[in-house]
Image (tube, rainbow, N blue to C red; front, side):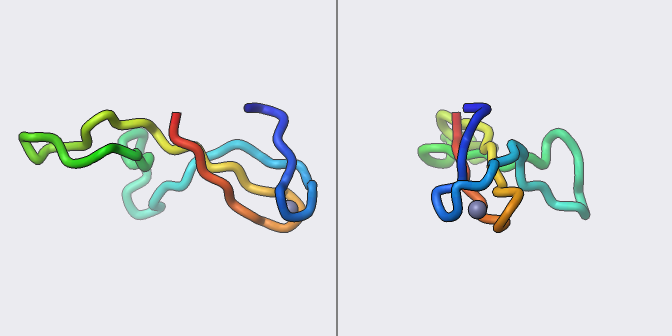
Length: 65
Ligand SMILES: [Zn+2]
């Protein structure tokens, strides 16, 4: 997953993630899940979301794994 090329312009994709600068912390990373858990305190089957950004055109592509 480290050597990715942009699907739009074939530029180099840089690995990162989307955070909120207001609440920046390790816990602010976005997660993908299949739903809200029974306790309502989080996600079922969560995966942290990794977003790649094209260095050339700025296109974003996200993966949860
Ligand atoms: Zn691109």
